[in-house]
Length: 333
Ligand SMILES: NC(=O)c1ccc[n+]([C@@H]2O[C@H](COP(=O)([O-])OP(=O)(O)OC[C@H]3O[C@@H](n4cnc5c(N)ncnc54)[C@H](O)[C@@H]3O)[C@@H](O)[C@H]2O)c1
Image (cartoon, rainbow, N blue to C red; front, side, top):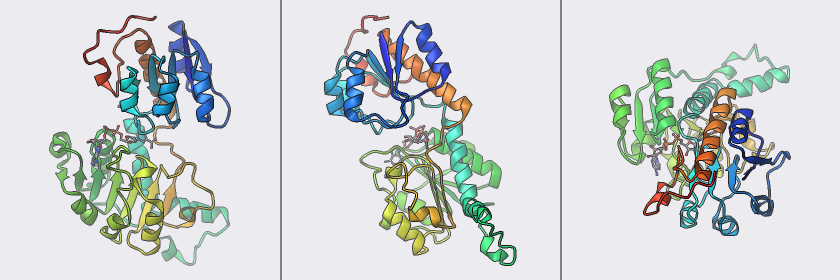
């Protein structure tokens, strides 16, 4: 049986697939597959392991309904039409949990780096500009005791809140689809409306998935309600903030700074004005990019593939409804 993999993934995952007797075809070119290439490579595959943001939409799924499982090398699944996959009876796997700490570290890094203008000052040193005689230009903001607002208090939001509370004793506010008792008990986090989150946060860190509800959630109207000293951090998906509105909010001093691991589009154009702003730090979507985390993600994605091909329930399934009212699939492995 054949697995098509859309990008080079760690050996730890490939080894598991090989040990299961699967034939692996991996896309190794240094560019993303086109939609047509993705369909072509999946025609004779039994499973797809998708690393990156290839669109797994209704058109793609209709072209390859024979796939027995699709495993994402990611926790976010905004690139997948889950309804269409379920209608075709294709289970979709993802990699929750194993990337929580690495991504929360990235959010924390961006909060701290932005508060101290770290990326901008690094760039100035590269230009030979140490700015010794104008030290006020280097001043950032302290984080101790400042209020952290979390939008999306799931696994990564809680991990970010835990780090910030431990490091800077930050009071935590959050807005979520439903109250999170763990964060309330463990961190004293306070559930607030979206408007209160905007108005009262000194740092606002975004950790909700990209959905129709959250698309462009952080737009001109939202930034206008934030504090002039607020730092906006997004490690979730670039589609949650409206980039022109974010740029205006920064230029008009409606907010103080921004730390972004995700942009819209990706990659960000090197001439983007955000990259020239002192109070902005941008990373190239490296939330989960540690050796250990990527190994763990590859292993979980491989386990999802193997379970799917055996007709077993995936260890991490996004659309459990695919199993409803169906007898367990006939083992194919
Ligand atoms: N930068 C990266 O490399 C990277 C890495 C991992 C995850 N992510 C992103 O981070 C997101 C969160 O990951 P997670 O593991 O914490 O997921 P999670 O499911 O544990 O948490 C998401 C939280 O968002 C909340 N939420 C959903 N819709 C909401 C809405 N409309 N309003 C308010 N809250 C809402 C949910 O209730 C949930 O508590 C993922 O969806 C993914 O897009 C990015």
